Length: 329
Image (cartoon, rainbow, N blue to C red; front, side, top):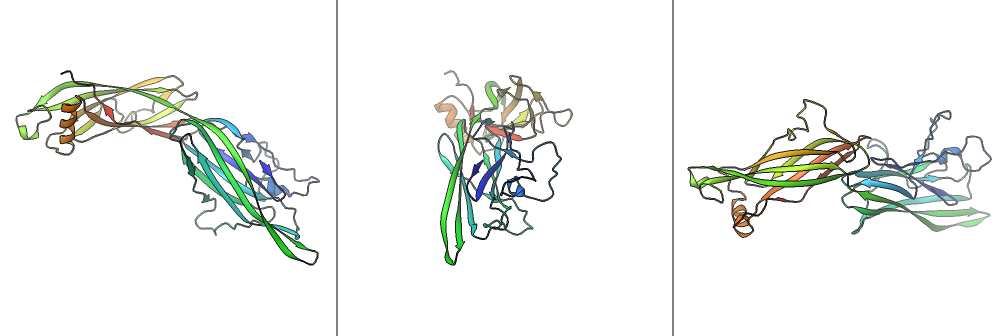
């Protein structure tokens, strides 16, 4: 948390593995000139002073790690801490900007208002004891170090003593660092099956008079240090192929017949798919024939996996194009 003469920035985060630091608000009865309500994450009069847990959970400057495939989200709260009744100094034109610095590039983040659609747009000049609230979300797609950079700027206006009001722009910047690590490791193997012979050569595959088939196996290993629940593993086949799950993963991991698989750290689950060339489908057929002639292998499609963490956070990842083994000449 950063404090200036007028504003402080409080950031509340939400991750699959919470690494939030307790930050207790100011006591209701104190000698401080800062109003108690301004130190709350979301200033309101309805907070329970006897509740044992702090109402503030803030992100420390470095808070461990997150998982690739999950969504990082947090609330940015710029609180006006000027004492009640202050007329000689005001803070207005509050503006919050944020960007996520990933290992490869920096991404400006879109800030959404914390107010509901039915309520009025939040003012950029919060009164004393009030807060400017913004929400951000960012899908983690890269491994490595990430930095959330937040910039807050506002105009401080001084007036009184019979002089004309004077204003100056003030700003401060905060950085929050974390590591994005993989949650699932995926290993695949494709095995060519005997082709299906067809009499109609007009619908045949790369081998005249036959339709090619493959068995695709995938091992999913939980490489994180927390348990997860796999909710779906689906192969998105590339035309002219179609895919059939051999382990009931197309309609959920168990087809609704039993609870989804629960993977502890280092647990491994295997899924399998039957990938068959569709008769009468010309889309992608020329590319398949060319790939088999030139490289001796075919592109089957992409594997999409979805899971939930112990806190209920959703995660997902997609592999690149999965290839078969090279055919022997």
